[in-house]
Image 1 (spheres, rainbow, N blue to C red):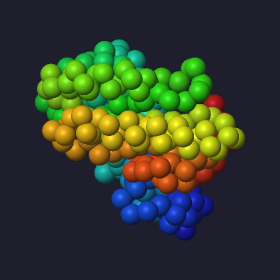
Image 2 (image 1 turned 45 degrees about the vertical axis):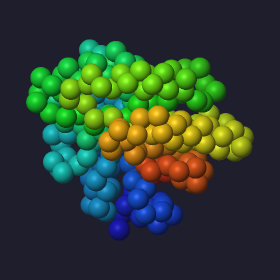
Image 3 (image 1 turned 180 degrees about the vertical axis):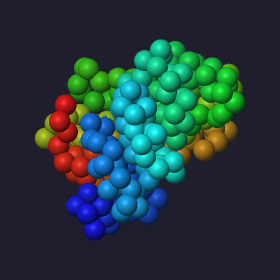
Amino acid sequence: MNEIAHHISEIKSTLPQGVTLVAVSKFHPAEAIAEAYAGGQRNFGESRVQELAQKVPALPADISWHFIGHLQTNKVKQLLKLHPALIESVDSDRLLRAIDKEAETLGVVQPVLMQVHVAREETKFGFLPDELLEWFANRSFESLKATHICGLMGMASNTDDLARVKSDFSAIASLHRRICEMCPDLRGFDTLSMGMSDDYPIAVEEGSTMVRVGTAIFGSRQY
Ligand SMILES: *Cc1c(COP(=O)(O)O)cnc(C)c1O
């Protein structure tokens, strides 16, 4: 087994059943992804449309690509043509409408996650919890024609304070529960994407169903 595939199998052995591992391959070459693929990995995360556009044709067609980066509305068209399995980083109503419009044009249903911002960093994108609650309370999803909201994605504060990390994940999980209670008719709203290399065990304890791990699989990124 190659080294990358070995890291993946070690991480997977720690994940409970039902938790999906997304291998975050951004800034790593297609060869690294091919090594992970050879070990059976099929879900990969990328954060830039340009980079994804180069990787998709160079790699096997049965890969599920997750888009996890900040997405500008003027890149939506290009991204949807690449058929991402899941856009995890919907951080505004405006972006969601652009995705919905483009998916409708293409005649597809695009799965997405709504990105929540609970972390302390000010530079991170996403809806504030109250904003998102209001968005669901207003049933703003009802007017979507070609988008399936599958759940929430969020990041914890980038800190050594593990109690803070835990409470950030717990806040995202409880937001998810509140939305489910408020909108019991939402179908397939069951994905909770949280946890990265440094904090995924804590995220899993707090109810994550999808972890996005890059560095612990591929090593450090060369930006
Ligand atoms: C880069 C990135 C990750 C992976 O981070 P690592 O610390 O390398 O595991 C996960 N989620 C998002 C949204 C990212 O941008």
